[in-house]
Length: 111
Length: 114
Image 1 (spheres, rainbow over the protein chains, first blue to last red):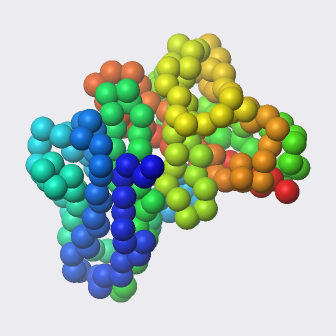
Image 2: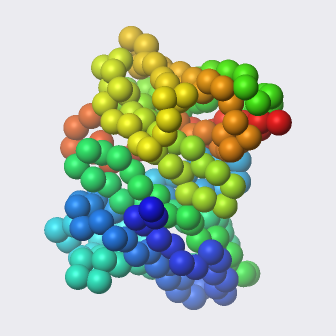
Image 3: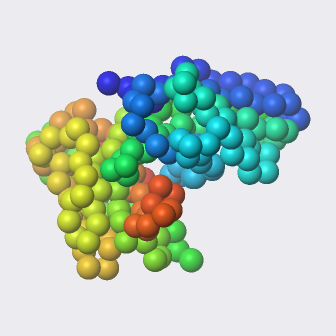
């Protein structure tokens, strides 16, 4: 039962343009959402998070948007840079502090 | 400031054998979680340890067990290995408190069961 879904396995974007990564979830009990970035041979690295009581959180080039009614969140990266090329995981957290991950989206930023 | 470390990096085992994976948390962290990441999938939560006790457990059989030591390091044990246990095993550490959701991951142990 995949409670967090990332339906796009890959995304290619030109350098300098906006990258938009999408994530859907099914469990309305999730109260925190996170994005992780993973390079090959490394563990996932925390990128940005958002509480379920907010609809937007911004950190530099990264912005996460949450639409609770649609059970949808997205990560915007602008401008995209070649170093952003990685696998991005969406994750959701319950009060029990268990992280539920999506299957990941491989972002390729083309110079 | 040392991050999360895991050992070994790679491991090859035979079906039916037992394996122990080790994790040292980030300095100052007191909580360790273990995840299994199969090829092409996202990490799946196995269990979490805090104060040397298992606090939460995901949907994994009893063949998966763990331990946390007084220095907060942790072990993951898998008995009676199956081919399907082949995966990347990730350890993540965090600090109980307001920022518990900020889990820091190690590089993982790649387990291959033949």
